[in-house]
Image 1: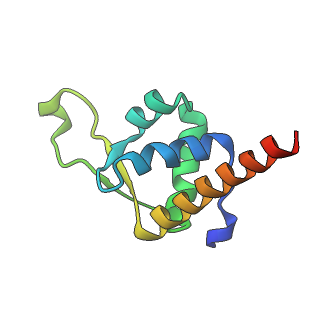
Image 2: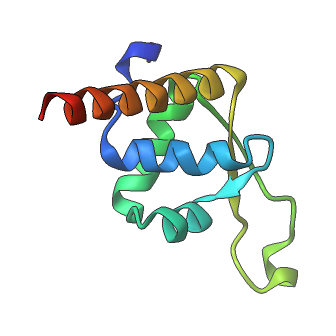
Length: 104
């Protein structure tokens, strides 16, 4: 999937903003869903698209689910490309909002 194929919907922008708060820290889907209020039916397909486009990397937690008493988590973090694109998308959004405010 090419970079330009990423749909920058409101839920996507919320998730990107959340990931940019701590760009070097892996975040679980459950953590993102709770913080952004984006449901799992929207979140996980979005994360897959962002990963396919090179905006995210992900990795499974290295635990034994039986010992932890819960399923393993998958952690997602922005790549350098993803950080740059997310910052640019959010900056463009702020500029657009500013232009709207001036035109009203």
